[in-house]
Length: 185
Image 1 (cartoon, helix red, strand yellow):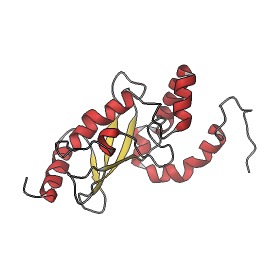
Image 2: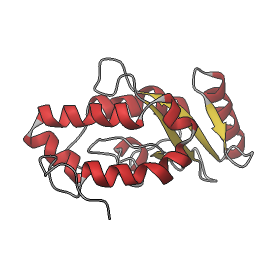
Image 3: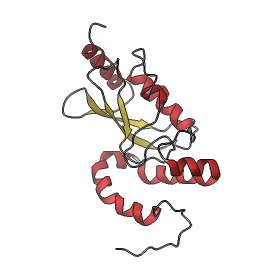
Image 4: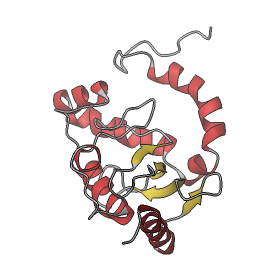
């Protein structure tokens, strides 16, 4: 490949021509959102997420920045920012990889095989190690609540109005066994 920009353009076009719905930001190919479906036979099956991708100027020699826009409950995804902790993207990225690898291999593997010993979401990691059944239930609740097609269509409105529901339902870092019906401030 003669230049990083040609490779970037080719990788983005390849992603757009695949089965993924790609929405560019600011009419460029450096920032875009991709519709990502949870892998089959996983707790995340049936979920739909908007994944924000930012390509550095040095892509493919430097790894892309990947983050979930709508909420997901996973030990290796920061619940507030959506940042992803994935070695293959953060530490061992190679120009041999392309954007399709991220969506067809890396993210599905992350969701199928969470690593609670290297967490970005300590609550999810702790719950996964202590009570797998309750963890599985919480993952499914998040999928039902935040990972539907309508959630990614208007994710900015969801972020503004959905936060109140979270604080009432989720509470702080304490368990879900708190007394129901917290008073409104």
